[in-house]
Length: 341
Image (tube, rainbow, N blue to C red):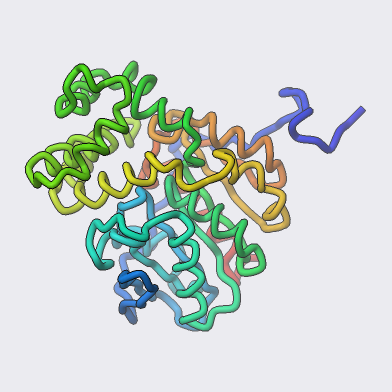
């Protein structure tokens, strides 16, 4: 007998939509510049940078960057058709151009959810598409589950829900079996006697008053993620993660969120509360060989949310810039644009 419960369905009942290999390639939309940028005072001493691109009268979409702490890049403007979309990007608290830089004060998931909503109100937007990858998928889910009436669609990539087992796999034991060479560099700042809890050991150093200690830890933490984000490691990509300014915000804010479990209660809050967004059209794009945010998490979300369109990219890691992942993200935003039939 058929059942409507995803949790009780046998594996053979699930027929995920699997993307073809990267032989079918698509280029990102052409680079664009913002038609407006500015800062929004969001309270608690924080000033959030945001920018607006594309068609000011087009369909609104808000782009949520990764990390936390990563900040927006120009490439994030180019996953949507600028002639059809009003594209809004923001740098989350402490990240990118937002001020104060790399600040951990009054910086939690729920502060960020409130900031996104303040920006929507500031721009007088009734509803918008929410697009996010990696930590951006976490924040997108947290925002949508808090304000489902404000979300037209969700486009999610490289799913991360900040459960302890996800953190342990990447920062304690698991990913090191696949990247032992990069792992040695990640371990280097931490004495052997403190390696039983590497996230805690890094927290001690990333919040140190000694700037040299803080920066050494920040670069090692950041480069570990940059080294493991693509199916084929890219030296130029890794170099960006090694930059002092980027690494400082990225490592400090990520680690701050991780030692606090993202302020989720219970830790699987995002999957547990998925009923709040099941009515919202959604696409989940996941690289099969994503080491940073392994497929297990995306699969758990897919099982809890079978209504969302599932796109497994068989030849991709974590990065949104890998060919197969890029193609699926572009196809999703094209389907949701106003001109789509």
